[in-house]
Amino acid sequence: MSPQPKTAQFTFQGKVIDLPVLSGTEGPDVVDISSLYKETGLFTYDPGFMATASCASAITFIDGEKGRLLYRGYSIAALARNCDFLEVAYLLLYGELPISEQRQTFVKQINQHTLLHEQMSSFYEGFRRDAHPMAVMVGVVGALSAFYHDSLDIHDPQQRELASFRLIAKMPTFAAMAYKYSLGQPFLYPKNHLCYSGNLLRMMFGLPTEEYKINPVLVKAMDLILILHADHEQNASTSTVRLAGSSGANPFACIASGIAALWGPAHGGANEAVLNMLRQIGDKQHIPEFIKRAKDKDDPFRLMGFGHRVYKNYDPRAVVIRESCHEVLSELGIKNDPLLDLAMELERIALQDDYFIEKKLYPNVDFYSGIIFRAMGIPASMFTVLFALARSVGWVAQWQEMIADPTQKIGRPRQLYQGYAERAFVPVEQRTVK
Image (cartoon, rainbow, N blue to C red; front, side, top):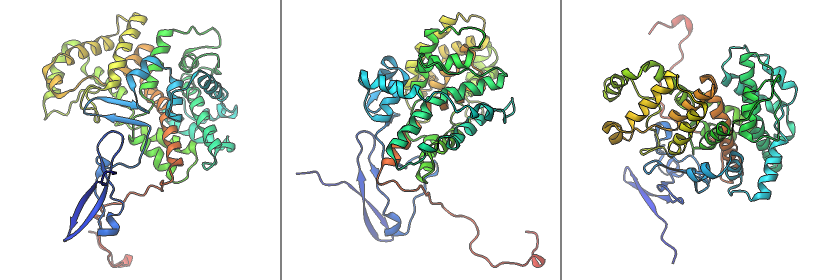
């Protein structure tokens, strides 16, 4: 016999209704409230959607209590240590890791689209040199819909796939060009014999006057950071992509909306905030003072890069990236950077301090990625751009999943209205100041 369906009972003014309880592969069950308004005339109220599942998805799973992150069922640690970024991209898009032939074909398909339409180079010139690179990224990614009309039909699976390839392939080119433009340096065309991260670093730091030397340690570190940031369930930017996509907007517009949401300092700017915090601390001798302040509930100071809204344990991504962080610092032989010295001392103290251990305020992925980027010579203004580059793969996978979902509807949250009730109109000559 099949088990009885689970239900939750809801009682309002003497009326009792049964609401279906749905179970996922992992994680808590959810109560299906789609019939609640029809049956009771009530909406639910959940600011920030902290207790609301906005969709069903098979892509990413987070267990915040145990510190687990899975992409399509694979632990983030296993993927980060054994795969490159494009393998993980294939997994997120198609649900399985590629066999050798599939991997080769996928890499070839991506490489076919790394170049931008040549007119897009002049598009950059419309921005001020001191424009924030994220402003540039929102503009140029959204502009793709003006150049590639053959991949805008969201109802055609082949066009959706082509749009996905283009977005994944062109993001490193976009990001590198945004950086070069801010410096006044010439753009470099991609070289498709290089790996994804190697191509990105060359386009960012190479010059036409000399051959760029690939450093495998830095390439590995960049690939690792991209993998760790590729997707993270229904966060603010991913939810934005899905919401925009639910209206039938073209894929390039949807990803541009995700970039805009990621730009917010409460979301994508956390690793930049880590460096700002380190500058505020200023010197290793000031660390005890700032740790004392962090423990004071009445002090507004917060240690950035420690703990996580979702993870109530060690951020599983931080476990992987910590080792890479120390490898990069060792490879580059950085010995006289006060900010990085300060970060390493803060890490040492935090991992030993009873307060941090009890509160589970461990260094998170933003703490280490900010340090790695700083060591590589990447300016803080580019941190969120590289985050967007990595997350674009997850956005594309989530967008594809949403479009193919037969239950998908246009997003339309309701509200708790607390404004005026209907009132009489007053002609202008009879109005008084209230």
